[in-house]
Image (cartoon, rainbow, N blue to C red; front, side, top):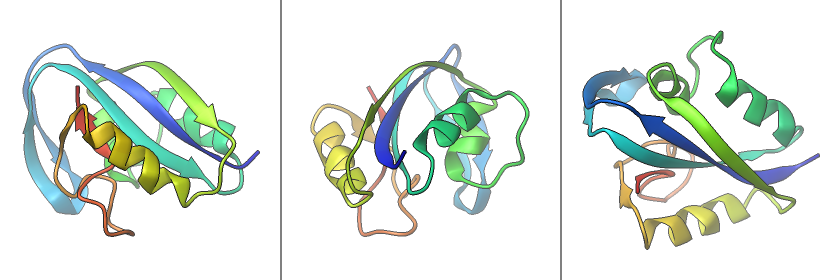
Length: 113
């Protein structure tokens, strides 16, 4: 199934985490929401975020090794809707600049709630 999704993560304590090419970022403890898309299998993408064993490839892989995934939702939409979902989330959350948005013009696809 193709679709776009959001995953809610809880970071139990503030910490600095190296996020790939973005470098070291300090995250406050609390809730974070990541928006993404699964162009061929969105369920597999969600399973990856909930997995403890993975190679770091995307920005969220680095963060998720330090935070607990709590919940998610999937919308069976075109992958272009991922940016719309990020824009909506940005209205209620604080964006982590450039996180998860290296292949589009969005400020971020990752938000502190």
